[in-house]
Length: 446
Image 1 (cartoon, rainbow, N blue to C red):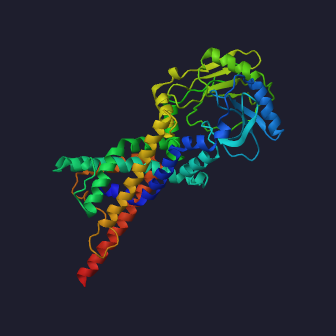
Image 2: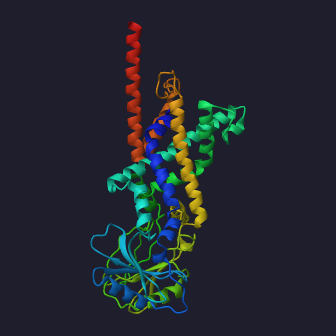
């Protein structure tokens, strides 16, 4: 209870900001479709230009100010083609995208896009707020702190819920808010019932969110690599060497391609479609240096199975390597699915609505927790509530205390921000206890 209390009070603001910005990000793909309708869509026509012709139009539009890096053909009738460029001044994982009407060749837009998701400026801004508060790399510590502690706080809360519901007379008050109570008990009823309904989703968001973090995320990556759970990537070597990589988050920076014949895009796509590419939402990446193959990658994260890829020789038009999602290890599949669900891209609008409601529920749980703290006043003069009593470990068996300490150390090693802040909580608690004991002793002596 003390752990749940301290973490909720001291880390609560970080979780609240992450939840509210996450709720906004969950519905950002739908908002993006409306805000950037002209860039993303074009009237469907019976005729269609080749990819090579569309690339030539885009290159004429940028007039040498940027270098071709990738192409995303129109995924369906009524959509535009993205011709993407690397350009000085863009940030990591950013590209300049020229949106082409595949039917008429009209340039429908020229925007900066981000990552494999291809998010446009509005969604990118929301993502940046959620990820680092717009503070760059140092700001990522806020989201890692929130993601790391969210799971701990929720698991502790579920443990308290189980203990209390076993002895409660009216168990239904623990699964739905009760209107019979007032004051602290009413707020407690809401906090408890909302918490148990969002618990599983909150743990999921915590676990998947950690994979993007700086310190905990690196530990996850190291573990996946050690257990051979990484997401396969096609080998692009034309010399026969094999290679792989982890395409987990798909946020690689755009690399300028070599000078390529625009018509090769059509030829390479045809080769990939004859191998395993069978969805419209794909990215074609030309080689960035000699001896490297072209890559055609499925990027449709709205479907749980569209993650195949093909590498092809641009000269001989022969497949060099292939990766099939069906051959992914189960952990790699779960990682791909987890990231897609977390980002609200799998299953479309339904996923977005569920993630939005889950994030709002987590935010509400934090607010209700603070309301409980304020109402839990020991006297009428106290401004805020007191924490649960300390000293419960005094009568515990030594092996129990050792298990708690060992668990805390292991958790801190796996999630460094939890370890550092947990140590800080202990120090604060010890100092506060010492001050209170001294005051009590002085009062007794007086």
